Length: 180
Image 1 (cartoon, rainbow, N blue to C red):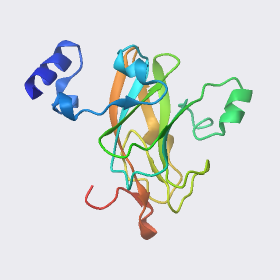
Image 2 (image 1 turned 60 degrees about the vertical axis):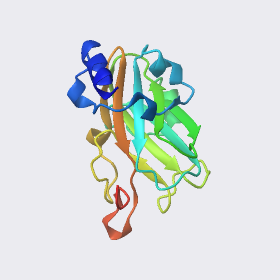
Image 3 (image 1 turned 120 degrees about the horizontal axis):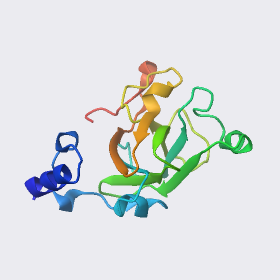
Image 4 (image 1 turned 180 degrees about the vertical axis):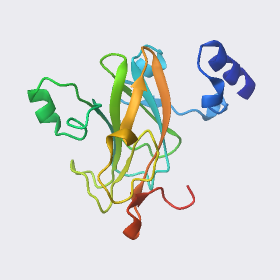
């Protein structure tokens, strides 16, 4: 089964070495209001496999921003007032299994993607308990995230990425949880 999946990815134009061969039965169900864009392979969309969650409480969010310093992490209401693109997908944290979330992009291009694990259920990022992650999977540390950590190129189809969740870990700032 692993070989068949790797061959199918190679034949469909996806570089098989970019994605480790996995059993089809072990793949996550794609969740979120944009799931059909990833399942049908329609795109343009981002299929984000989220790993390293601290626990299975709260909700998960993907936010897609214009990939500019000015717009990255800007309030969505301000982006809307300026006529700029912004998209957010919220899903309850699955109680078990792999986590796979889809978010549509308006067109192929360069964007900035933010993942957050909203553990307390409030609609505001809690620095002390919530988690975050970006496509680069670089350790976030204590500084404000940089645009380059979040940049992703979205094709006309679907791009699949893995985002490793990071949580506050003492004086060193945000990092993946131990053992992950």
